[in-house]
Length: 462
Ligand SMILES: Cc1cc2nc3c(=O)[nH]c(=O)nc-3n(C[C@H](O)[C@H](O)[C@H](O)COP(=O)(O)OP(=O)(O)OC[C@H]3O[C@@H](n4cnc5c(N)ncnc54)[C@H](O)[C@@H]3O)c2cc1C
Image (tube, rainbow, N blue to C red; front, side, top):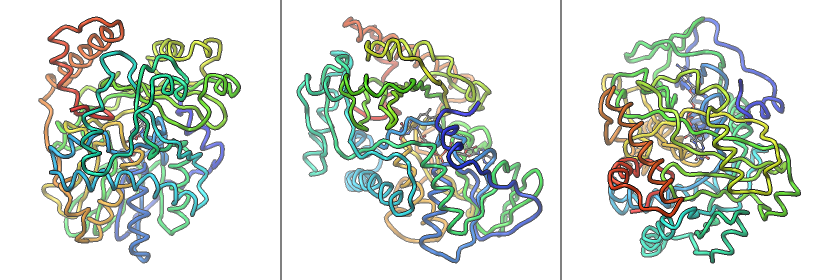
C-alpha cells in the first residue's frame, strides 16, 4: 500500500527512474531519495555545477517519511530553549532565523522550478486543547521577543476557535512564518528538478553494503557506485543499519487520516486557508485542510520499532485509524458523516535531543550522514541539505561550523530497555494527557515520566 500523498503524486508524475544495472562512478553518491538526499544533491549541484552526483533509493523517491508526512512546513522557533541549552544562544538565534528563512527558500525554489507542491504560506496556529496546555508557549515566546526574533502573536480564544475551525482549541498563538505543502508532490518535484540538473537517480536500488577507503564503493543488488564521497540520507533506517547509531534513535510512527472532499463544510467551520494547527501536547495532534477540500489529521508517538527495525506495520493502513477518526469528530462534529478516504503511518526518527545531527562516520571520514529530525523535518531538511552539501564540498561556513555537525548528543538505553522504556513513557503521556483532557490532575509518576519525552516534540515549553 502506498500512502495517500505518494499515490496522488505518482498519478501526476507516473514515471519511475531505472534501477542501477552494472558498475558506475560519481564524485558523490547519496543513499536515500527523501528530502534530505534530494536537497543535498540539489544544493551541492547548485554550488558546483560540474559535480557528478548519483542518488540511489531503495524504493522510490518519497517512499519514506518525506512522501507521507503531514506537510506542516514549520520552523524551530518554538524549540528555542532546547536549541539554546544545546548549542548556545548565538547559534540558537541563528538556527531559529535559518529555519524561518527555509520556509521562504522552499517556496522560492518551488516557484522558480515550477513545482506544484500546493504550498500555502498561511502560517501556523499552536493551540491548547486542554486547560493544562494554556500558556505553555508563553515563556518561549517571551524569550524570542527578548531577542527580536518572535513571529508569534496571541489570539483571543474565540479567534483561535474561529481560525482553527474547532471549539476544541481553547486558546493559542499564531505565526505567519509557516506553510503547508503536499509532501508527495514536493518530494517528487525535487526529484524531477534534480534529474533536470543532471543528477542521476536510480530507484528500486537499495544500498546493500559499502567498502570504505579513499573511494567508497556502494554495492546494490545489480551493480555498484564508486565515489570519493558518500552521503547517508536514510533517516529512520540508520539505527538498524549502523552499530554506531543503534542507540541514537527511537523509531516511532506518526499516524494520519485524510477525509473525502468536503470543501463546503470546511468553509462553514472556518478552515478557509492552508493554516496548520497543532496543539501543545507532547505527541501533538496536527491537522490542516488540503486545497481540494479534504481534512487531514495526524498524531505522533504510536507504534515503536523494536531495535529500530522498520516493521511491515509502518507500510499498512494505520492501526490507529479508528482513534484518529474519533479525534477528528471531536474536533469537528460537523464532519461526522464525511468518510475517511485513507489512513497510513510512517517511521519518524526521534533523537534524544529532538534535533537532527550530522557528521562523518567514525572510521570513514568521506562518509557523511544526517538524520534525527524527530517529526519536524519538512523545513529542517532544507537546512540538512545546506549542512550536508557544505560538508561534501569541504566548505568552511556557518553550516559546517554548526554544533549540529558534531554527531549525536545523546543515546537511548540499549534494548530491551529502550523499547520497554519508550512504551512506558508513551503510556504515561497518554494517561497524563487523558487526565488533562478531562480536567483531572494527572498522577505524579505520569508527569515525571512524560518529562523524559518533552525534548522530542514538535515544540518545547521550557
Ligand atoms: C507520518 C509522518 C508525519 C510527519 N509529519 C511531519 C510534518 O507535518 N511536518 C514536518 O516538518 N515533519 C513531519 N514529519 C517528519 C518528516 O517527514 C521527516 O523528518 C523528513 O521527511 C525526513 O526526510 P529524510 O529524507 O531525512 O528521510 P526519508 O524521507 O525517510 O528518506 C529516507 C529514504 O531512504 C531510503 N532508504 C532507506 N534505506 C535505504 C537503503 N539501504 N538504500 C537506499 N535507500 C534507502 C528510504 O526508502 C527513504 O526513501 C513526519 C514524519 C512522518 C513519518
